[in-house]
Length: 170
Image (tube, rainbow, N blue to C red; front, side):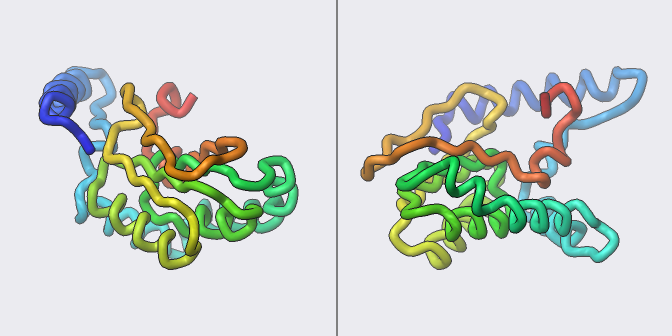
């Protein structure tokens, strides 16, 4: 959960980022400012359009490489997802892994985070789900899992990468 001090710091950072974006030669705003329920819903609608091919490509690549990924990750993995949004591909991944132990979705959008946690709990029973409301670009603490785990796998979905500036994505 986000502390009051962290929330205040995010608001100050947001103000600084808005001003910097408006003063820049090429005007821009950080996409994280759109991470409310309406913004998340709009992004999901755009992602579902036939003309929005990245979602299909991501799912196809994941299906093709899931056996190799699962083999490399091994059993009892902790899966950490940066920008949980719609965890369709993450559910595919968790189902393919051998006895995944923990799922830690991290997102700024509380509604999307709660939805992701709910969907994964229903789709992958037995996996400990520990949602974290945070800006993953800033320092935050991972929750301590109740279950032991093997390797940690960090997932950065296409939807998250789509919202980052090139320098942020790197």
